[in-house]
Length: 258
Image (tube, rainbow, N blue to C red; front, side, top):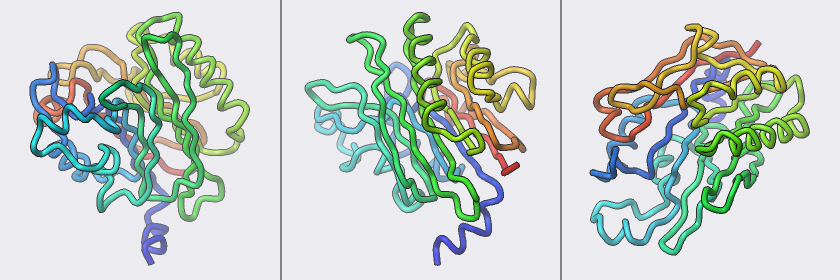
C-alpha cells in the first residue's frame, strides 16, 4: 500500500544535500541532532545526501544526555525515510563517521568506495541505486565528500568519473551531490567534460550556490550535479535556524524525468 501511494508522486523527485558537521553547530558549541531532525523532516525530501554523519562516538554519547541511542543516519531516518545506507570513512578509537543516503524509495544496492588521497584524511563516495516507483530506469545516487587539497581532490574526481563510466548506464538518471570542498570551482568543468552532467544552481541561476559558512555563505562548496533529469527548482537553506545546526547550508532541488 505504501509504494502504491508513493508511485502517484514519483514523476517529480525532491532531493537535498547537507553536511551535518557530525550533529554539532559551528565550532562544536552545541549538539543539534534533534533540531536537525526536525528541520529535515519539515523539508521532506525523497532522497537525502548527508556528509559528516557520526555512525558512533562513545565520548559524545557519555557527555550528552540527549545523544541519540541509534547511529545518526538511523535516528534521522525514523518514520520518514524507509531505507538508508551508511558509508563508514573515518575510523578512530571512540567511533567513526562518513556519508549517508536516506531514501523514501527502496535502495536496491549500495557500495562505499574509499577514495582517500592520503592517510590523514579519510574520504569516500557512497554509490546507491534507488528504485523509484514508476520509473523505467533505476536512479543512481552518488554521495561525495572530497578532500581539502587540490591535488587529492582531482584524484578523487577521477575515481568518481571512473566509477560512473564503468557502472552507471548512459541512459540512467544520475545525481552526484555532496560537499566538494571546491572553492576554486574546478570540479564542475571536469565533471561536465567527462560525465556530461550539469549543476542545478548553475543551470537555474548561472552559478553554483554559496553554502559556507551557513550564517553568511561566501564559498560554493556544496553541489548537486545531475544527468538524465530536468530541474524544476532549487533552494539554499542558510541563516536561522539552519546556521545554528551546521556550518554548512543545506541545498535542495526538485527534478523530474525527461
